[in-house]
Image (cartoon, rainbow, N blue to C red; front, side, top):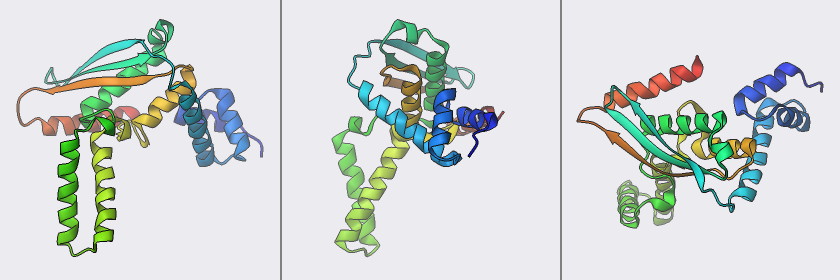
Length: 216
């Protein structure tokens, strides 16, 4: 199958991968767009895995303020070199992550950071709910696992769906950026502040605004 320039452009727009990688992905998958996206993500994961052990001591602490000064985020994101840290691509990635945190309100970066007592409490609630519905023990345990995974996806930054592209998680967004920049990238920590009470609606409005920006 002939791979056209427009196909390569569409894939590059979707994934942010380089032109040559997009062309190779389409060639390897006989022009199947969805399979090409998966091919690029798999390649990105492999590259990210190789670089994960490398020291990431450069980077930035970025601040993002929204909602008239009533919603703010500080996030630390690390890379390996000052050269990458000062680049436009890195700064855009950092800004996207900060905006996502402001919009989605994660509680932890990764599920390993969730306090054990809170996990135990959630598991107890999920288990009781399953048992109260009359499910057998074995089925109840599977339901607990499913609900706990959903709990992590809602509360852990790396597992949340990216607000500007819900087809990918923040972890996938990071993996794709690692593949592009060639360095180990780590979202280290963040803090999110909301001023006052009754701002849930403002946060919801911000999510809608980010999505409109992504579609523009």
